[in-house]
Length: 117
Image (tube, rainbow, N blue to C red; front, side, top):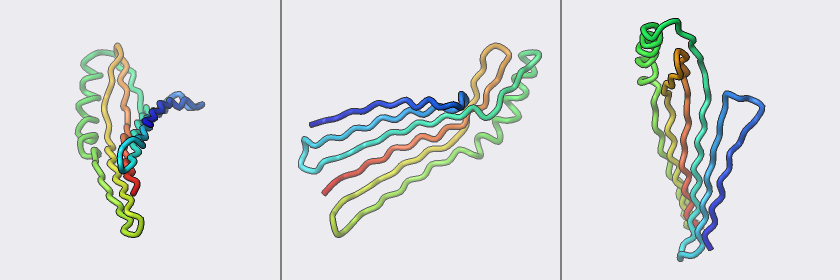
């Protein structure tokens, strides 16, 4: 049977958003479980007086953001049971503009794949 679970986690901190999707498929010879997790954090807000100020703030901070983007891949294999786990993680920043307000948003997206023996 294929099972899909979608979750949105809203806590007391309005600056944090977490979404997760889990999928488990037992219909194949080797059952597979996948889990996607998306986390977003508003780390900074900038209230500009003009569009020029807002563009300047984004340009200054975007140079730092490009250096912080990272990607990690981890593979784990249990030779005794034959189970395999693969984890992909991407971490970075992006900017959102709403009127004259700029937001710096940090994200962590991960995909976990678990292949059962």
